[in-house]
Length: 104
Image (spheres, rainbow, N blue to C red):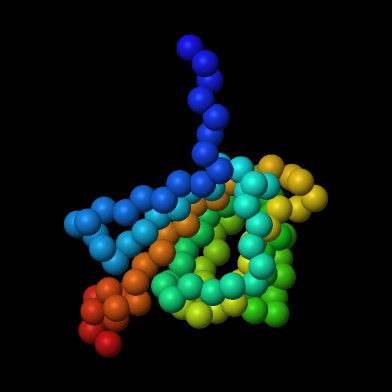
């Protein structure tokens, strides 16, 4: 049986949890993003390798096991370091759901 190539990234959504979206990037070298933001609260975990993470004016090298948090509308970027393989998972949480749970 032929080996099936791994998709560069995959998204998961469940109608029962409309306030959540999950994403997995199998090879972060295949996706690069300039500084951007999301309307959601974002939680990311580096699962393999290393990358450069920028949140606002702060820049860090992050490695497997690192968890990053981004508030809604915070400008950020996370990109490969000199073609070093890396992978990550993200969870995007709608702020309306967070506010409802916190009774804000």
